[in-house]
Image: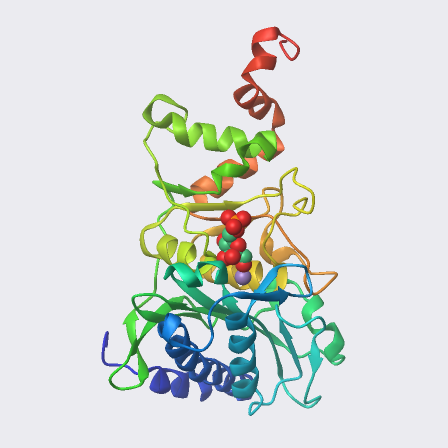
Length: 345
Ligand code: F6P
Ligand code: MN
């Protein structure tokens, strides 16, 4: 089946299970049509008239590149042919209300990690598909557990679709010669124990004590409480980090920190954390803010940020433990205090 089954056939089989599944399959198909076009665009690099250079800022003040805008336009054109009750995008201030009879809503990050585009690193498209509520304006205030499907496409050495329809995670890789996706890996499982961690360590001085304590445990390796050595990676592209964790385990942290504007971390709940958390859980991993399960959260605003700690369940649980029990966290991460005795019992 690996290498043989086309995405088209896979979606066809799924769509036969009912009208809601048909609506989901139709949207996934449209997103992958858009993804092939985005892969071509990002793959042309400097040969394209789209430079990857910053052109402005999006609704939330992030630098917006011309490729972000172009990717958003491609996705919206392709999804425009599909019945969708509401569409949200990182690049749009407000959600767009569409066909009120439609069964589904879609939230999308058209080009995740686009700061990597001009350095030829992997970027991607992330999507979340939700059931349409009676009032479509409430579509993106649903809990992450309501998601019907989620996925992301990586534009790297391979263009690959990582997909969950709520029953495990499969990967499809673009066969460029044939112009379509084929099943590449089935039923992915993330090991419970991580051997790699990923965090932007330049923010260390801004982290909360539980996050510092966890990273200190990783750095202590065999000599610390984890009793094993860790490797470290930071790509700066959520899709690439998620792909790596799905492939060989690991833990990723984009926590809240003390920088102005980072009180809830950096990543967006609706079109980044929710879909990634759904995929990670479907592969046997965990995703948390450090205090709560990501999928139990419901957004109160479209571009809401959320701390995201995801990957191998053992490490995510350890980060949660350190958040519940701040005392060991404080003593591990504030040696000066411990030495001077302010917190000594
Ligand atoms: O979408 C935001 C994003 O580009 C993610 O893909 C990535 O994980 C993160 O930002 C990197 O943030 P920073 O540049 O702060 O390390
Ligand atoms: Mn993003």
